[in-house]
Length: 513
Image (cartoon, rainbow, N blue to C red; front, side, top):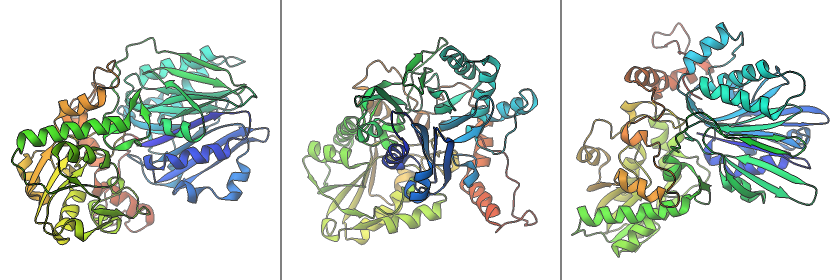
C-alpha cells in the first residue's frame, strides 16, 4: 500500500507535491520522497519518515522545477531501509525516476532476467526497482533520438507483457515528461486531473482523487486498466489504452479501509460505498440476530464511522462515539508485529466510560484482519463497564493472503484463516460476532459503477485474478514476509542480530514492493 503523485505545471511543483503527499499520508507512513526537474536539473529528497519529517524548509528550497513526482511508502515487501524509499532512479535511458503502488507476483523471475539477459543492476530487494528497470530496458530498446509518445506507450505495452501483479506507476522521464500507467487488471487505483489558471493546462496523476481536490485540479477520469498516460513537460497530454487483454478488477479493500472517504475510486464514491456497507450489515444483523438486545452502536474510529451510522439507523438504536482517538498514533493495521499493534491500540484509543457502563454494546469495525485490534478494543469496552459486547465487521472474514499490495502475506497471521466464526468470536472475546457477506460487500461497492463486473477480493475469496498465484508461491511469500521474518530483518539491519546468532535467518529476496 503506497501513494503516488505526478504533476506537470506552469510553476514550481514542490509545495503542491508536498501537500498532495500529506493528504495521502494514510497510504504509507514508512517513507516519503519527491523528485523534481527544472532548469537546475534533477533534484530529489527521499528517506524514512512521515512527510512532515522528511521535508524541511532547506529540502523544499532545493526541490526546484515545474515537473515532479512524489511517493509515500508502506513496505509490504523489501525492507524498511531508507535506501528503499521512493522514487527510484536509473540514469539510462534519459534518466528515469519511478514511484510504484502495488506488488509484482513474478518478482523473482523478472529479477533474474534483468540481471542475466537485460544486463541491468539491482541494488535492493524492492520490486519497484525491478519495475523501473523493466520499463527503462523496454524504453531503451525503442528510443532513437527524440522521444515520442509512441515510443513511451510501446515500452509500457511491452512491460505489461512481462510483468504480473498489481501496480499503479508514476514515472518521470527526465527532460521529457511524466508517464503513468495501471496494470491490465486495474487492481491499484490511479486518477488523472487537469487545472488551468490562465497559463495553459496543468496535469496531475494521483492514487486518490482527494489529492486532486486539495490542489484544485478537476478530476478528469480514472486511468483505465493497462492504459498509459504521458504528459510532456510542455503540458501536452497523450494516452493509449492497452491493446492486450484487460479485466477491470479493482481492489475492494480500497473501499473497505485504504482510501479516504472523500475520494472517488473508479467512479465509485468511497463514502457512499461505506454507507451501503452499513445498510447491508444492518440487514445481516436483522436476519441473524432478530431478537437482539443492543442498546448502542459504537464505531471503531475512523474508517468504520460511516457504516456504523447506517447500522444504528436501520436497527433503530442509538449511535454514540465511545472511543476517543489519539491522532498522533499511526494506523495500527500497518504497524510491524502483533505486539506493537496490540500496544498501539491502548495508546491510540481511550474509552468514554459513560457510553459503555451497563449497556449492551455493538462495536462496528471496517474489517477484522489479525484480530489483535479487535481483541484489545473489546477488552477496553469491558473495562469501561459494558454488560455485553457484540462485534460486527463491515467486511467478510479475511481468510487468505493478499499479494497485490496489502500487508496480508501470511495466512497464519489471519485470525479467520482455517477458523469458524464461533472460534474467532471466542478468541477476540465477543459475546457475538457478525460478519458482512461477500456478495453484500460487492453489491455495496459496485452500486455506483455497474461496468465493473468483478473486484479483487482475494483476501476474502482466495481467488487471485492474475492467475499465477499458487500454494507454493503463497508458502514462499509467507516465509519471507511474516512478522517474525520482518522483525529479524529489521533487527539485523540495526545490528541487534548478527549472522552468527543461532536464531538469525538469512533473509531471502522479498517478493513485492
